[in-house]
Image (cartoon, rainbow, N blue to C red; front, side, top):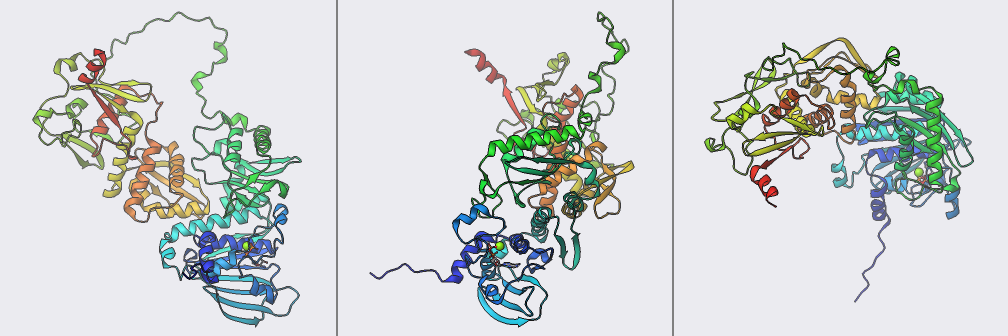
Amino acid sequence: MSSIIQLLPDHVANQIAAGEVVQRPASVVKELLENAVDAKATDIKLIIKDAGKSLIQVIDNGSGMNVTDARMCFERHATSKIRQAEDLFSLHTKGFRGEALASIAAIAHMEMKTKLELEELGTHIIIEGSKFVSQDVAVLPKGTSFAVKNLFFNIPARRNFLKSDTVEYRHVIDEFQRVALAHPKIHFTFYHNGSDMYNLPPSSLRQRVVNFFGGKTNEKLVPVIEDTEMMNIQGFVSKPEFAKKSRGEQFFFVNDRFIKSPYLHHAVMAAYDGILKDGAQPSYYLYLTVPPNTIDINIHPTKTEIKFDNESAMYAILRASIKHSLGQFNVAPVLDFERDANLDTPYHYKNLEGEIPTIQVDGNYNPFAEDKPNKLFPTYKRAEPTASWESLYVDVKHDTSIVSGGNEFASSNNEYTFENNEFAFENEEVTSSLFNDHEVEQAVHKTYQIHKKYIVSPIKSGMVIVDQNRAHQRVLYEQFLVNMTVQHASSQQLLFPINLFYSASEMELIAELQQSLINTGFVFEESNPDHIVISGIPVNITESEVAAVLDQLLSDLHNGIPENSFSQNDTIAKSMARSLAVKTGAYLTEKEQENVVNGLFACKDPNVSPFQKPTFITMRVEDLDKKFAL
Ligand code: ADP
Ligand code: MG
């Protein structure tokens, strides 16, 4: 039998290798920017069109290449950065694999112009799908320009796999941000579809961070500086009161390279231990410098992960120095933002004797008086004030429309009506209550909250146990969806508009979402480059919750905004429902408990939370009997 093994032709091997290096336009941006930095450029321009799908161009004023190198750089494993394996341990450059240009050239139309400083003329090369199309001598400025057009032109499957321009553009910004933040002394400019998106002149670290994340950032930053033999730390962390819901602005740079490190992230979080609200995320921009021979950056193909020799010592140093900075810059007094003032003992009480408690009875208390409007559920209105929630549950025997399967709550008797933009439900004629009549009369409470987590209530067949958080999520979720689809949400006008500051990429995202947010009840004033002005908010949000709700939304959407508006609405409704729902651990008054339960069973799909988790369970008397029979 003849031999069957063959070497792959270079262009095929390059295409395969390209899959690892180039996933999307942002990968090309990263490689080209890093090459420009490695070439010691002081001025780097990034120009893209259609989120990089049609054009990615990087122009630098760096070293340039001579005519041989200009040709060589497109070869696989062609690099000027290492000569032997040992060089990996003293690496001072971003690149070292010599794969990027070969990979990009294999899957795009590429044009390169490059000239050394001391030469008169430069080289102009066009290469398409690994094939050299032309090579000329040209009059050029010092430095190099790479233009990459029609990415994945020869791999349609990959091209189709690309996300919307908004998503791809956001990835590009992320990469641009990482390189530009790591090199504040380099002048970066960034153009998208002909508009000037960023112009970042050479500056201090602090100024670069502020240029990126908006003027308001400056006052939020606390400097961190530490110099030990093992590593040098520089950078900033945010004051705890500015912590966000989203993990957006968290950056580690090791030897000027952006890295991800869950371990070091943990060290930062440990430094904030006890001074952050639950789930809040500080921003940080931390630059670590370590001897190159104590790290291994070769363990991940896209090189954002890193292995340190002295991981646990680094953890300790990082944590201690951030803790020190937070203390030193006197952020401690503002930390107790959540302190309950009721727990403070006023001075004049301190020396008083304890008093014997007495019982006070309010003779005017009328348990049947109309309740005050409920703050928790302001839009929630019952069509008939006296209708109590148990009347929602009709007798199974009399209602043939109820699907069997033990879910006596999936009653089709409840309908949505839209009155005065409010969401109310009405009951049709109720044949009988799930409660035995005398049971209702005797019942002091209809609902009980246990462990600030579940609401328990007797029903005819036994009892129902509702998860308060999931149930309320379901209620809010359906409310938001209804508001967004009928596009007629009511909103509350704010006396003083709220200004919220965001980074450029967050502003992009908000612009994208604006219409859906308006549909939920937000009212925006005209927009600004780095902040939004909100003059009206949905009725089921309080003013103090607005920033957190939007933060959560941005973080939920960070990894890709759904393409069609239907699922975009869905994502927003889910995110806002999650932010606003009563949490596990929250005490609910009887009225609030009732509202949660009523609201849940008025939902179209009461069985599961918006995240498909069960919202309630029932336990039949027989089940209880069985337990006692043992
Ligand atoms: P690597 O960066 O890993 O060495 P690349 O494929 O990215 O591999 O680049 C190959 C070589 O091309 C580099 O080692 C460098 O010598 C040269 N090169 C690439 N981009 C530039 C640039 N902008 N200016 C000068 N030289 C460059
Ligand atoms: Mg490179």
